[in-house]
Image (cartoon, rainbow, N blue to C red; front, side):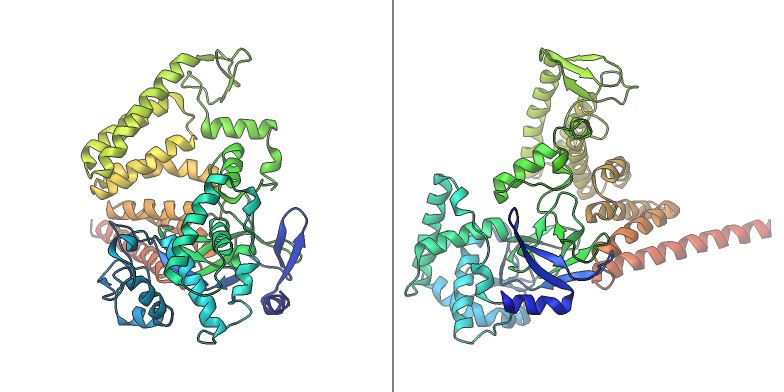
Length: 486
């Protein structure tokens, strides 16, 4: 790791190891909000291709796709992306082309990642692909696999997948156990590659970025510019402080976050938020985010279970909600949710809207106004209303989500900035220019920190803000002219 340490030094970073965390990335100088801490291209990556959706292997675009005529697995949007990938795909293509049609269907994105991993290692060993301090297989070998923490069922699955990879590669001296361990490393260390609006595009392995540890209150954020992973500071990070990002959705109770991290990443978080587990403030926040509301609509209190477990007591006014009443509403919500999911999956959006509105109505009876469960339902409603071009309703729902986003996300969280952006676009579309300027401005204030200002996405947002300001200025000027004429 000496070469990596030397490569990180000019970037103002250093590696360190802690007994409870393992390897960590530390700031060797001060970093300030919006500043790029580190960026890295993927060692290997694949798009999220499925039977129903395909993306270009080079840029992850869905437009103008043509399937590779030899392997019939990989897609490209044009010759430039094909040339970009050719050094590696040339060999992958030969291997995939040898598989029969049925076996080829088993080549999932995860299988392809491992195949590409070994091919890239081989090509780097043969000096076909250059090796650098931040781009070499040794960095992959150094990643934690947590193999000792994995249950027998998962180990068996990894072994079966490893056998398929071995069958595809047919390379000498391939260790099945090592392949299985790399599957485990991917599960713990690979990142979901997203577009600027945080929509999933693919999966990539970024061995240096993977050194950065998790916090439920991180001081940095990971975003992607194409396939390039970029980590930016969202707080002032003093010299000698650890750089941290979030691995999971942070809008959740401590228990939910801990459960997700344990299941997916096999560790228990000890960040400043998680250390409050069981304290009164944490219990209150968890009950608000994922619990029930007081039956008095004028009360903003949260509920906790009675000692006899027969009901829930409001911690503000003392009113009791019957356990069976809540159970009945929860059961109705579950039944409606199952139907709504089927309708939206089958494209029956009009019926899905009716069902989600009924779900929202029931959730408002039992969930706290700041409930993330209610927020998720409104997010789904917003998504479908946008698809149906029901702009007024979409704006009304979007505005309902904003106060919850402001509560559950830190000030410089990309999801908060993107929700302001969505609100601004709807307001501008509906002629509410002054409100749109306010929303766009709030979006810019956040997203310039998390996304920078040079990407096409941010340039478009800044252009929209300027156009909205120009429109507002023109309207004001026109009104003043009309007043003078009168």
